Image 1 (tube, rainbow, N blue to C red):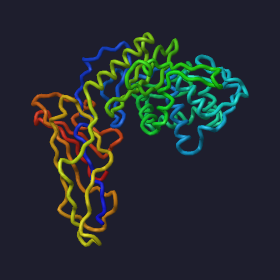
Image 2 (image 1 turned 30 degrees about the horizontal axis):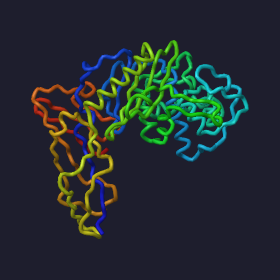
Image 3 (image 1 turned 90 degrees about the vertical axis):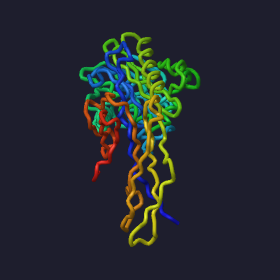
Image 4 (image 1 turned 180 degrees about the horizontal axis):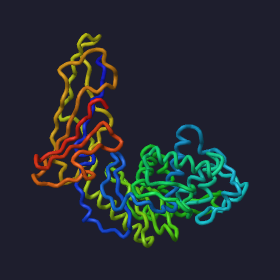
Length: 383
C-alpha cells in the first residue's frame, strides 16, 4: 500500500483582500470584523485602542473554563459552591447565594445567557482558588494569544482602573473560543432558558441570537463608562464571522453596527475549500522500501476570497521529480498555488505592506504586485 503524505498548500488570498472601509459607517469608535477559520481581518476601525470591554471580558472567562473542560480538568457535572465574594457581585447576576451549589454547566449557561457576574466569579474561584489567581491566568492566556492591548483586573468586566482591551484582542480570544471549543455554541445560542428547576428565568442579553439569521453568539457588555459593547458571531454557508463593537452610544446602535459588519462580510466574501483540479501524482522514492509516496493536501485548505473574484483563480502544482529516502509521514513534498489575476492598477492593501507574514501561519508570506496583475502566497524555506 502506498503511504500518503500531506502536501503543503499555499493560500493565494489569505489576508490578501481589498480594503473597502468606505462602504461601512459605524456609530462605535472601535470595531473589527474577522473570519474565524483563517483569522483574516475583513474590516477594522481603531481596532488597537485600549477600551473598557464591560462583560465582553467574560469571553476569556469562558475560554479558560472550556479549556479546563476539554482537557479533563473540569466537568460540566462538577459542583461549584458559591462564595461570599461571588455572591457580592453587583450588576448582571443570577442572585447566587453564599453556600449555594450549582453545576458547572448551569454556571456557564448563566454567564453566556444573562452575563451573570456572580456565576463568572464562582467559576473562576473554582478553577483557580480565587478571582485574583484566575485573573492572573486570564492575563497569561491573553499574552499567549498575542492580545497586546489587553490587561484584565477582574473576570466580570465590572469597571476597574486599568481593565482594558481592544477590538482586535477581543476578536482573537473570541476566535480561540468558538474555533477550538465549539460546544460553547450550545450555550451562546440559547434565547430563553431557566435555572434552579425553572425558578429562575433567563433571557439572552444578545438580541442577535433571536433576530439575526445564523447568529451563534457570543457576548454582550455594557457599563456607564464602557458604553455598549459586543462580540457577535454568526455563520452562513460554512463561514463564521466575528464582529466586535466597542463603545457604542446605545444598545440598539451596538446591535446595528454588529449586523452591518456581519452583513458586509457575508455579502462580500466566501470561504472556499480548495481541491486539486486533477489528481495529485505519486512521487518516486530513491533508495526506499517502496517505489513511490502519494502526495495529498493538508486538511487546512480553506481559501477566503471576494465573491466577485471567485472565478479568477488558477492553480499551479509544484512537486519534485523524486525524493530521497527516508521520507517521514507529514513531510512537505511540494506546493499547490492558487493564483488570482487582478486588473492592472488595482490597489490592494495588506496591513500597509507589499509583503506581510500571515497571522497564525508564520511559514507563509504574501507578496503583492498589482502592476504585474497577480498576487501569490509563498512558502518561506526552513520554517
